[in-house]
Length: 161
Image (cartoon, rainbow, N blue to C red):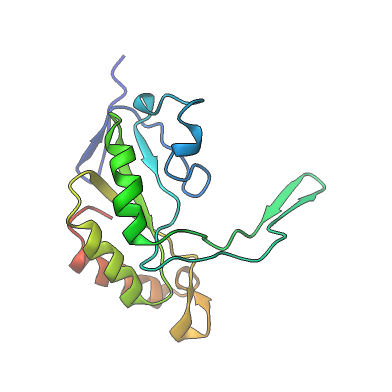
């Protein structure tokens, strides 16, 4: 059965992809999951500089589930390029990088750095990040901010968004 799926001009061998944030870059799961069987690994958010994330506690059990507030902890684009991309290139799967930032300029920095990485097939823009210039309102909460960041990133990205 052919399960190929094409999104924004990128063909995936199947539509099974990890959810951003839950799978890191797959290193922690490689002994449990054959990454070669995935259509893509969608990475945890990557910022232009390391982010420590929120202080603990970050996870709380509640009736019917759990709440989490990790705070987009990540090592930053330099470590991601040096460590995570070489790890992911070992596998026959597409790489989609989740990009986060606090300002449009932060996002542009990451998007431009990833433009030099041919192994990266696509970018996912994390608009739940607080926009520092807009009083910490998330980019995705205001239509004009969402339009502006998306338009700006499309002008700088070499990969589809």
